[in-house]
Image 1 (cartoon, rainbow, N blue to C red):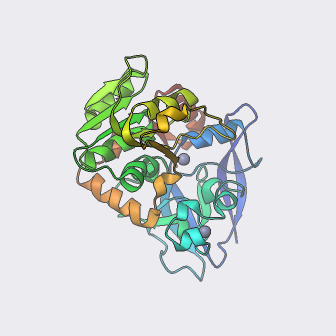
Image 2: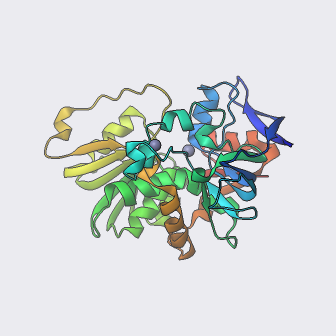
Length: 337
Ligand SMILES: [Zn+2]
Ligand SMILES: [Zn+2]
């Protein structure tokens, strides 16, 4: 059997056009998901403007209901509510050590296939694998849970999995999109005492203060320093430098902002002396099957009010959602199918 699916494809001008595509029945290890919602992530916009694989279906913050599964799939069944995340092979040394975000096949599975991040969620249905799906409770709205699969997991994971700040420590977050604001909420969950949120957009700074930041700073304000931890969420060289310079000695910076292909950053090696460090992270080092359920518990308990980040758009209005993301008007546009 073949399903006809409506999918949105990037056009040369960086916008999206919806077209029908044929989808085959799930293979033995496949999971067919009917999308209910999909977040629009910055990586989708970067990739739409500079495609890695022409004709690739973008979208990688899908949430929906399992429609059918292949015969080898045992972890989910039709009717289950699921959030979609990234793909990993399960067999390489990184996967065997529980470092799935650093899977040897990460690039191949998540960027170079027909579907971005192994899911392609800008479509009414998608075929994915059991490793990409995380079962979620069916009493929670899927449009609120969708961004867990990338943006929220990345920001919260940078704090809770990578930096693991000790209670009472200080943490600065540079760039307040969905990733940065998730890092702010996670810093509060971790018990950080001083949480500094940095962004040129005053509305974002105000939202950060409501979500747990103790100070909000415009990048043109006087520089601050002596932070135990920093999370850098945009990847612009001057922001990466500012994040490293904000650190105490010793202090650690995690950079998760993605600017497409090459992105050289010049650092003053002097700022890395006294034990300061910087490292990158993919998807907040998270194992989605373990981390997303933890984040859902924080959400239920009111510690991770994801609904404050989400603005919904009908799938037909995908270009309005993209515009709202590019202009910064919406923190996390979520398409509804
Ligand atoms: Zn993403
Ligand atoms: Zn692997």
